[in-house]
Amino acid sequence: MTGSIKLLLDPKIYPLEAIYGASYVFIDKAYLFLKSGPSGKIEVSLKGKKKLSKKQLRDLKGEFLNELLNYTLRINLAKYNKKIREHIVSRALFSALGGEKNTEGDEGEKFNYEKDPFGIAIPWEEKYGKKK
Image (cartoon, rainbow, N blue to C red; front, side):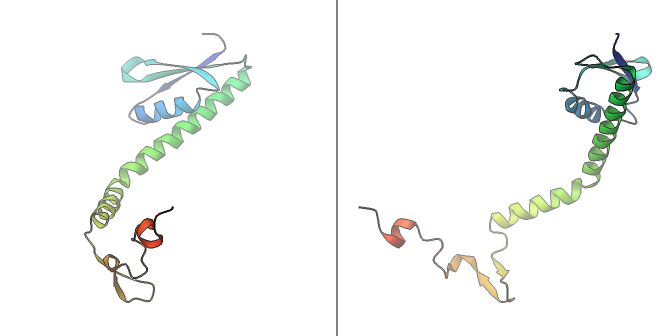
């Protein structure tokens, strides 16, 4: 393919999800072609949407590799942080379902949100009457 540059990527180093993510970012800059290469590697061909010089193609390859590294790092961080994210979400859902009824206010005293001392939970119609 003339006016294009090819990369041979090892999926053990760059996960397939990272290759897809980086490819998606480059959809508006270049045409991308992905196919299986030798010994399980992924071949990525980048072809500029406009005519590009050899230097511009090398720059495009460098940008793609940087984006690929970015997505690989994101995927790895997501794996490492999975447990803490699950814990935070489960605590939030537990609290939303009423798992923790008493909490501390700003001054440290205990309050119960079900008592509604400020009348926040009263419907508008009950508090101010219906519009005539």
